[in-house]
Every structure is written in C-alpha cells, then in structure tokens.
Image (cartoon, rainbow, N blue to C red; front, top):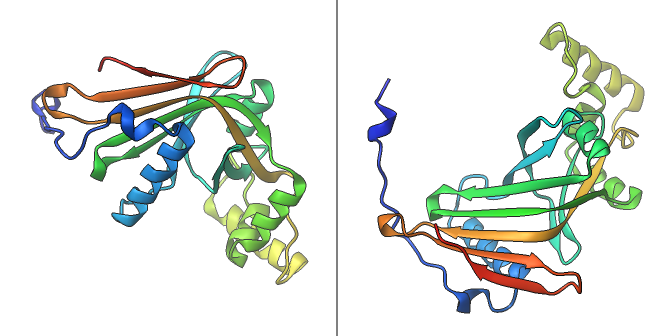
Amino acid sequence: MSKLSEFRKSYELGELDEAQAEHGPLRLFQSWMDEAIKHDVSEPTAMTVATVGPEGRPSTRVVLLKGCDERGMVWFTNYDSRKGRELAHLPFAALQFHWVEMERVVRIEGRVEKTSDAESDEYFQSRPLDSRLGAWASPQSQVISSRAVLVANAAKAAAQHGLNPPRPPHWGGYRLVPDRYEFWQGRRSRLHDRLRFSRDEQGHWLRERLAP
C-alpha cells in the first residue's frame, strides 16, 4: 500500500468570488451543476446524504439528485431503509456533492420532508420497469440470506404486477429544504475559496467567506 501521508495534489482549475454568487445559492448551485454535466463529470448528480439515528450515531450513503428548485433538493428511496428510519426520527440531513474533475464541493443542510404522493407516483412511473420491480423486491437495509432472495422477490413482483407495477407504499421521495449552503473551490497552496450562505429568520440569505 502506498504511503498515504505523501500523497499531494495542487488545485488549480478555478476560483470562486463573491460576484459569482450575487444571485444567491440556488442559482450558483444550478450553474455549477450545469457545468458539471457539460464537462462530463462522472455521476454529477450523485450526492452523499448524512443522517443521524436515535442513538446519535451519524451515517452516510450516496443517492442521486432527482429534482432541484426553490422548494429544495429531491431524491427517492425506500422509506423503510436505515436513512428513512433515521429521517423519521430526526428530519434533518446534510448533502454533499464532490465534483473531483472540477475541484469543487457543495454542502447543503436543512430540514427534510417527504414529497407528495403525486410527485412520488410521477417519478416512479418514469423509471425503467426493472427498477420499478426492484423497489418491490428489495427490503432495503435488512439482512438477507443471499442474492437469491432478491431474484426471487423480483420474479414474484413481476408475476404479480406485470408490466405496470404501482409504486410501493414504502417507496417515495424526500425533499431537503435548505437553510445552509457551502461552496468550495480548490485553489493553489491550499488557500481554497469557501462561500457559505445561511438563511435568517426572515428567509434572507446571509453570504460569508470562510477561511479554508
């Protein structure tokens, strides 16, 4: 194994100044996402979701962003999964996007709510058939004896629901309503750019520069 303490990288691809953020955090995030997609960043919509369980123990996993507007950030999953159970206990989360190819990180924090049934139904019906059957087949985060359990469950779901499986009652969307954003742009000499936006009680965004 390589000696990890000797690994070094110089960040030199971009910069982030206040003028780029004058229209607020959502506009800046959307522009960064558009650039990530345009530049063929690997999995640009992949984001780490951090939640906290009843015992105070944090956990993370990677999901895909499926919606982004003034209402918040949306993803879809199994409500009975570990993250679903943790969000039922404490409906707050933190998201992180890491676009390695562009030397950028975005962190977003806020309250989490379920999307409407209509939103969840609409997205579920847009998924490929195999993915819709998979939502029925997988008891997400539960212990199973082997992969054969998933295959058998998928076959059972296909036999029961055919080509038009409905959305399972345990599956749907979450929306994180942001109250804090942080944008990070790698810079040379570890003098990185960090801009933080925090929402005040009136709903206005306070922008601050943070030391790296």
